[in-house]
Image (cartoon, rainbow, N blue to C red; front, side, top):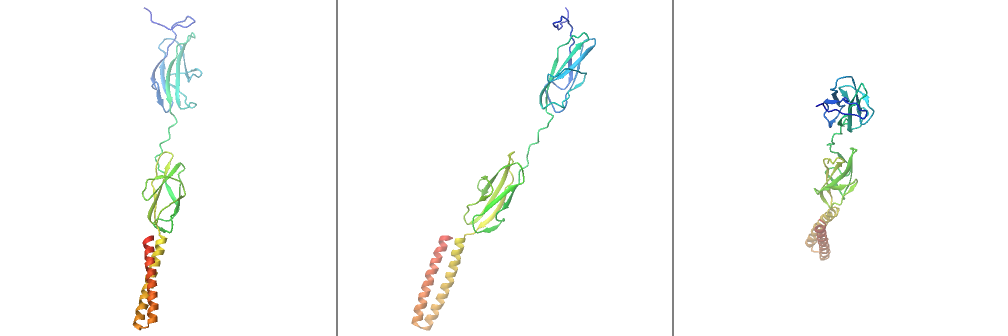
Length: 255
């Protein structure tokens, strides 16, 4: 029984074959030029040829290193074949590889930093609900989130005008970048004065002082025994007491 052979249309047999016996594994992903070793087991003079991605066949020798200088990242093919001195050409053998020569950019894990550029200083006392402006030097900021008095953070834009009532408050803002990194929140604490309460309290203090003075005058009038003076100072005392009571009611309402 004779060994099987590959026949071509010209009737010739014993076409040379190529055996790829080493180098980069078939289908491998590589970051640099793949190299392959091959040989032709048949005796006699043969010409070995290689091609990349269905390009032109070129003479080559083993080991063969693929020129990747013009290749883009992605899948590629390498074909090997041999041609006998008689011109008889053997079947080609193919190897594939995936080129990943351009490294992926490292993941962005750096959180953006936000800066409060205007608004009350930390610990400040303000007469009305403040407005804060803020910014970030990071060029990939996707947005900002704000929180007041520990509430859940919500999307916001600069400037932010707060709607706070009198009392102690804390404003917080943080930045989020396009990679999803959330920065550390920057906070400002402030105390919003209650002007109505302050005014009512000051008015009450004046009313109490006026009442004390009116009582003292009334006491001196009684000591003098002058009825006219007594009646006049009694009326002033009663008026001062009414003013005090009105001021006290105003404090209870405003404070």
